[in-house]
Length: 294
Ligand code: RIB
Image 1 (tube, rainbow, N blue to C red):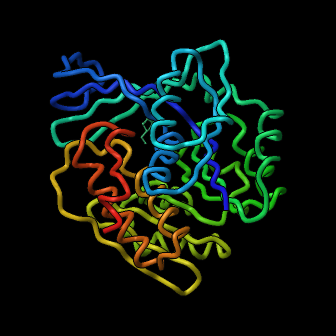
Image 2 (image 1 turned 90 degrees about the vertical axis):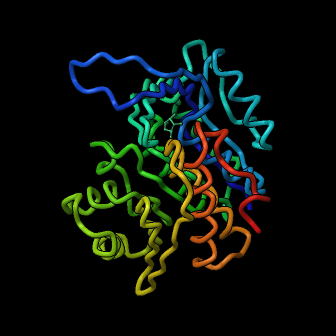
Image 3 (image 1 turned 180 degrees about the vertical axis):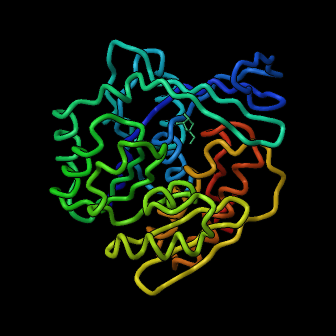
């Protein structure tokens, strides 16, 4: 089984601030760090650090070469990443003193992925393979349709959750990863709805898909037909929540691929994301498999 992450690759500019800047306000940051990120690249990293063979597909400019080098150093196969003349995607990230973040994206290469390269890349994968997707690249609908035509299993993390999501062929998805806000939005519930209720509605709305609902400090919930499971986080100091969801996604998929039960996979993914939030940054903060599979 091969795993393909077709997704975003970003240069993250991380500003550590006292509080997230308010409209009209100017503040100074305590530090600025340039690092590797993008939900796609982070999820590929988590899968690779968990010990799975993983392929990354996406698009970057010359300024993103360091992303490729870092991904390769983690064992991600980057042969399917295309280079183009423009700029790599960027994320302006503010992280406040409680570890909470706020992100502004510039799509760069992520917005320049073309139909032909989608067909070419996905054509090299087939039945028994899995594709892992997020909502930070162009032509997500075409990627999903091409993947389904090839018989791939589709895992979707519909993040960031914007107006494009409801236009996607969501019934093609086999495994969803959503947080409470994304989950509630998908089934038109108020964002204040309790996680188990959101989960029930998601299971009803997507009867052929497995659903993972992450709930921050409350851990993560799983639903499929009548089955329900729950995983708990480990209580570690929260330093930076950037990439925690990506870490969870990669480790859950990896644990299931290693034949863990759903309950075990939830426990492993919760543990991995607890480690990730206790460290600064996105990709670099993702723990190694030997720290998590113990
Ligand atoms: O999920 C965290 C990621 O979101 C960051 O690395 C940033 O690049 C954005 O894609």
